[in-house]
Image (cartoon, rainbow, N blue to C red):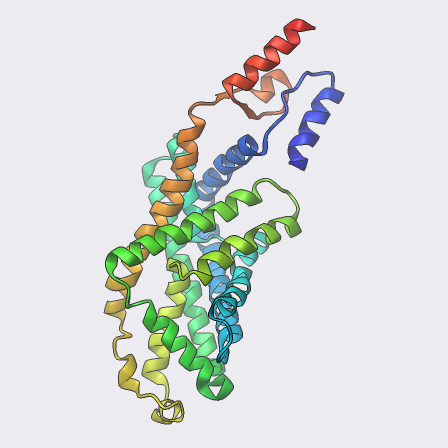
Length: 324
């Protein structure tokens, strides 16, 4: 809102009439720029930033596991809320520090719908970002296993990780797909809200509640799962028999933590759901709504700030100018 008003004020100071810019229209315009920038970025740069984003999301899951371990008889919802707030660190790091996250990169569907990028360019972008996120997640699995974090709190930290990872494999296909849709609607709406501000602190605050909601409600995030489930699989395969015995569980209780189960029961449906939730419902949904809007003159030709206005609003401005 601040940015929109400053643009309008500057235009008036330069002697030009200007229609006030609503945050709705400016956010959509920012989404176009955001989506195109993802696709046209140099492949090596995109991949490198994707590795960072995968690592950031993994670190956020480590934070989640830490704050939810040993909750005991604490209120279920409050424990998950605290875990969700902790997990929001991941998306905050991606937005503020810079990173290419697959689940937010699907918003490039807006630029694709506007024919600013081709289908081939879009799919290549999504693929390299997904692979980069995977590499970042795997690097963190290795580091966290080497650090022995799963032995924290007498092994309860690792047991928490095993249970979280195993739970993700117990959804039906349609459940995993639906949870993926719900998750990325919130992720992309959180990203969309950040388009309304230039302030880093404001962006960070805006991201907390959408992320806290999807995490506390158990929605499914494909890139988070690229860390969490392989991490659980690794603990199940590497931890000593003494580790399981000390916790009163057996290694066989987590035998369903396999790569095949992860890919076919979770990763595929969740990834597809994330694409539908963020790329189709949020991205293409807003693009479809914007087709009823018209663009005011090109700022480079008219020397006025570029923004979008609805036909009804434009007509009101014309009548107001005529009455003068």
